[in-house]
Image 1 (cartoon, rainbow, N blue to C red):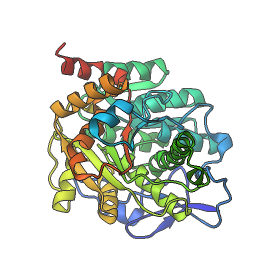
Image 2: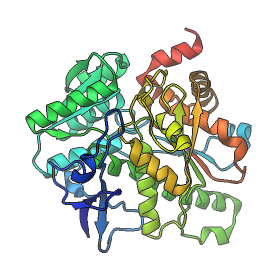
Image 3: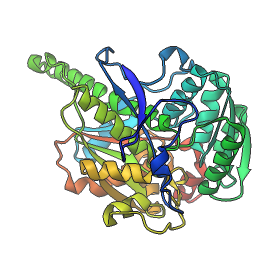
Length: 400
């Protein structure tokens, strides 16, 4: 099979090279204070010869870092199922990734790409999780990591960056300022940029979660059938697509990766339908939800939310994510900080899963939307970061 970059907007194709990030023609149309124009996606053609559970990726396996990224648990939260009335409810738990964040999936692929091409340094901007993720994965891969991080980022995430040995450059300003500074640095030095959306591999790395969902849902069905003694069900070997997936959304790269994974699964014939994907956003940072309602992105509104990991003024991957939501009938749900903190406490107290505020926004989104769902549907709520990364938020929720 042949891998290449493709522009979903104009159809232009490019070789996958370290110096290639955006589509030339579409990036030239970039407007001030708007999401990135010209975002590319990884594409492939030809025959895929991988096994039934393998995931097609554009980086050879031997270059991927020696780190156990992915294959995270798909929980069956019994108490939450009983209280919510949804017996087919699952939690996809990426809080147990090596650095405690879903962002490891993207960092893993970017690090492998760097090793494959003899690159020794990677730079990026982050609100915290991508920074600690790339720093940890980079440490395992033997790469130098340069991080541009807002000073207001949670202390735990800054400590992670420093413990992993990365070069931390603190920024007086928002994530958007850090993003611009990191791009200026990578352009001036020639190092590889891992900035989300800007580097297409960040989307591609995150698609792996969709493959794991359908695999593990099939395993869950098998276990249920075995317990019930349903031999006919045991004979089934097909994969199962969830009916709904709730995703915490900030800059739009995670939800883009989720869509990309399900698109590949449909193309490979492993599933027959695209799930309904829900973009769960904090009320104080809801640009993508507003754009889905209005049809386009308007003037940026300064973000203000306790969920720092999904707090952005201009969602860099907003245009790409919005296009996917529109194409596949995705939905958006906006939740308040109070609802996020209540959801965080409920996840911990009822399921034993301590997730940070950004992840808890997905659970809050499900709680807000569940009256429109059927109880017999299969629901997956994605939890993307450990609560230990931001205990300040949890302390506010507890009144401490």
